[in-house]
Image 1 (cartoon, one colour):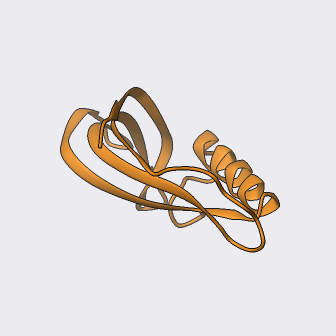
Image 2: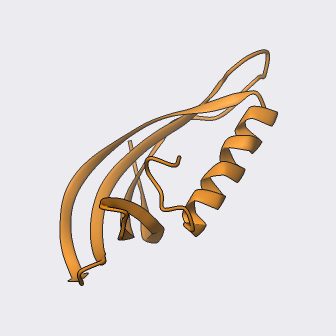
Length: 105
């Protein structure tokens, strides 16, 4: 997480909480993300805001003795990503899904 997110990233806090919950539930997520499009919305010397449209395919699978009754699903997601320059590295400060559409299989 420290190589992906800035040290003060609220998204990193959320990611840590989600990973902790997955471990407690003895499951993991298998996912793929295919970018349909990405654009720079705004940029300054120390911050860049992107708008990315991705097809996200995810499935929850057991990581131990857990039983999982979930089917894979695909979504088209529009994501707002804010990158910040953190000591010369562009890292994620914030990532928010602003729109999601479930795709039928």
